[in-house]
Image (cartoon, rainbow, N blue to C red):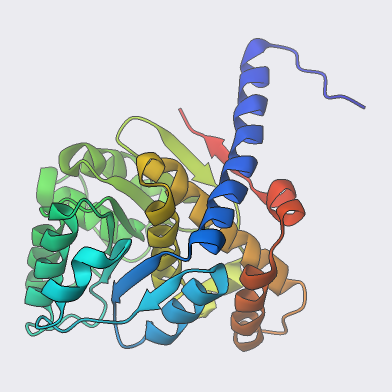
Length: 286
């Protein structure tokens, strides 16, 4: 039976929802076809899952972080991913050089500001990186609130208990101040460019029991943005949704976090058009 829409608003929302699924499939297909080269300067904990996530999606990871190699290598990548999880004074200059080269070369780059508010050194480093104009900033609610408060003025305290919906206003402010797309991961993922806001309702709670899933999805965002840089907002939402769907599919056969990690990678590799079109769940927020 065809749905019975009672008003124009419902019809518009329905049409908007339908548009997201083909977009996500087109961008995933482009990643598989083009195999974009993604340079990953990421933390020691996440390197394995980040590389395998990119490979299973069809992208080509390059785990290269030496400052001596970056001037030769970074201008040739399709996107750059920077993650400050195991940040050290030795790595920060390389991150900055790579971000500047990516920006100067017109290449998109994505920042994961892990534990941005945990220390003064880390917060300062993250703010300096935000100042280098990342295409996308993806973090959890507390990380985005910490960055937003530090860069555009305080609003409320930061702790580890924030839900993604708590950070919508902070994300919008950060997006407006930085010019970046800002994504907030959580039970519901939030994406904003400062004006538009969408929510991604894909994924399963057990994904939070696997270390580096946030790091991995940020790398996947870089791959999606690499193949469609003119639509970075849509690419960010699509990547979060597709990764969440892979988690949902993996959970159908997983027994716990360890097997979910394996099944999630397999599901991302094997996900087909029917699965994407029927499972993408992205909604616009007011």
